[in-house]
Image (cartoon, rainbow, N blue to C red; front, side, top):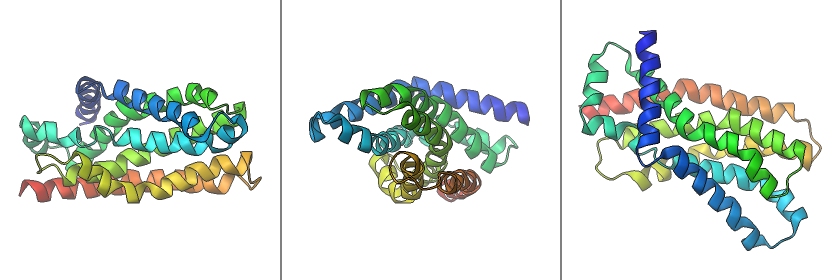
Length: 223
């Protein structure tokens, strides 16, 4: 069962990278948002450095929503979802494996690219390190929450925008505590540990709730 779980993660990574180049599209979108910010707020580097962490988190949030609508729909379209249900692997673990695979293909490249994009916004080394760390902790939560929305629209033909509408309100706490962790060090001077622990707790909770709720949504959609 472990081998099948790992194989499913690898298959999801390949599908996510192959279907329109998930990692490439996400990084380009991430870069596009970061590049547009200076045109909107002006060339004030102090202002860019102050709002940079929030902009990076918002860009990462929007980039993770790209491609989520295909997380289960491709498997449903080619019949793989029926085979996964009959494989003997609990559907909750199927959702967990596909969520991990999707994060490896789309979320991890954003984390790795964050230091470069932080330099573009003029962030110092401390802010860049915290942005990268909080994205590493928080982006899996965005994927696990998004998996619920992706499972809900699996039965629909065109649900790309609907996933973003469904998921976005539930990702706000992750965004708040991701940015708060950075602000605690760079702006407010408050202790950094409480918001980081809450961010970690949100990720752990979503890792449990996301697969369970996603599996329930898939079962309801297949009936």
